[in-house]
Length: 238
View 1 (cartoon, rainbow, N blue to C red):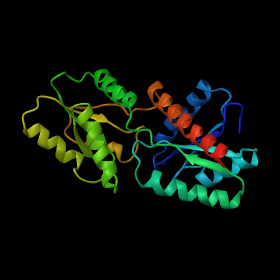
View 2: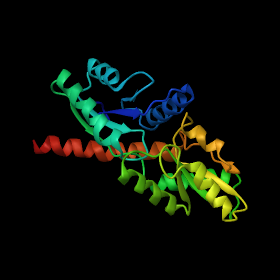
View 3: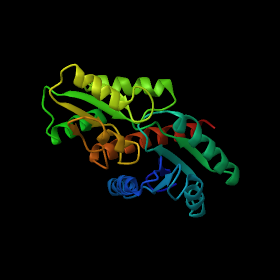
């Protein structure tokens, strides 16, 4: 517990390509700048360190007993529903008395929709362009359906770097329908192996990832605040 509430542990997916790490570190740095009294740390589900176990152990060693975990993920798929809670239950077994709650995934959120539109404008995408939402895709049908809804919100089709519909196929289909310009709106936080597939399609424009912009940071803090309120309510009820 800090002066500003439970500690915040941001959990990123992790990537075999190190170019994603600075983005995640920048998000957490901006969170700290926005909330100077809030203890905030970063962990990864794979590839990069610290792992979730390592980060939780370090926080507990430093006196943290209440923890809000904010997934730096855009959909509530398997990692949010299963992997992260399983890791935290393991941490609780190692550290009796640790109280934790997992916040919602970052998406969907109106601020992220606005950021997608801004990225399209920054890239010089024409008003009459055909837009394809470039997402990673998951094995969770509900999460994939949610991504299709995000695409519809910005007037786009959806294509996945992993899974169906394959983004290269979607771009080709849109092109075949006569689109003068095809743009991919990258619905990812950072570059990486799978997002790199967006640039290997026949799209005319591929926008930059969402990155560590203010909209992303504000959503992280909104998810934290809502989860911290649940943790406090549970504490009062027990």
